[in-house]
Amino acid sequence: MRCHMPAVGATALAALLSLSSGAGAQLALSANDGKAVLVDGVNTVPAHPAADSVTVIDLNSAPPKAVGEVPVPTSVVGPPSSVAIARDESFALVTAATKVDPGDPKKLVPDDKLTVIDLKASPPKVLAQHQAGKGAAGVSINRAGTLALVANRAEGTVSVFSVAGNALTPVGKVALGDDKSGPSHVTFSPDGKTALVTRDGDHKISVLSIDGTKVEYTKRDISAGLRPYGLDIHPNGKIAVVANIGTGGGDADTVSLIDLEAKPARVAHTVTVGQTPEGITLSPDGAYAAVSVMNGSNKPKNSPFFNDHGLVKVLSVKGKELAPLTEAKVGLWCQGLAWSKGSKTLLVQCMVEKEIMAFSFDGKELKPAGSIKVNAGPAGIRTAEP
Image (tube, rainbow, N blue to C red; front, side):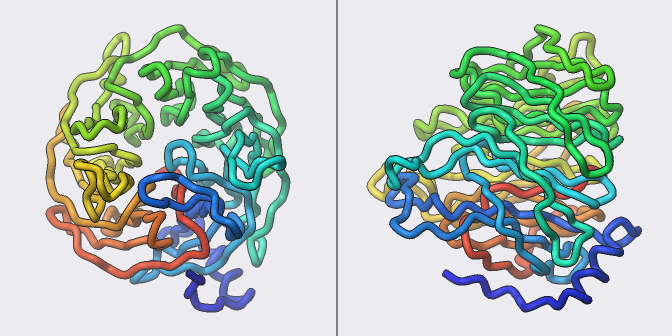
């Protein structure tokens, strides 16, 4: 399937990007994996993979539209938080957890790439590429724009990079467990003094302490559910939400709310959402959590757990509890989500259709509001932190 995005001239794109830090403008970035297709429930390397890429999306447009594309290595492996955008939208970071095995084009092997994209350039361009760790997956930038962290799924570590402007310098790594512990996503508290790391390999959420560029594992682990994966922290820093993807055995899986005000932080509430909650993100106002649920859409068609559609669910956040609010059908093997600044638009990535679905949200219901076709499977998406 070819991309049907409209052609955007350099002048128009430059104008959009120059406004991106203004009151009304907002960018979302979708990382698209061309080397992964779903063949009857099996993640398969196609004979002629499309190039991996990052699509730049104007969320200020109605409906949202693609305004540019950059060739960048990425991967569907890991939670769909393989993109991070600086708060001023000047640059972005994209990880690549896998690459095609040089010795066998039908197989994937762990990758460690972390790519820096200049979003102020017209068109956006790659500035630099760094090595994180094996299986580089979830990535985040602190709100001050001075530090970046990468969860390395195949290594049991978190890579630390200092940031000056849009230049990264490797500082070191934080060891969490062995290479089976599966660090998946890492995200900062709003004050930048703490970070949480999901570990889907050994069912833990680890707490990191941060002082400047000194990042340490506190040895405090939180237990939320089976295979904690996607993660987001509320803009007020008082709670976090985590998607527990489970074992893939057809059981209903869960989303948990973590009370970060408690001493020590702990899980305060858990709700059931269905099979395999792949991505999770809080709305910028913190009132809602959106969850993409596989719903068995990634299973073989003869599986008793197969469904011919995924689901996007919105949960309301009420104090230290979550409550189901609304849901909508989406495509197959859907991944990440991104809210607009006003929490009125929600993007959902669907791998099989190579499509990013847009929904309008009025606080009660989700309604279809357009879509964006991309050249490869959309596998990770973020906006800048509120």
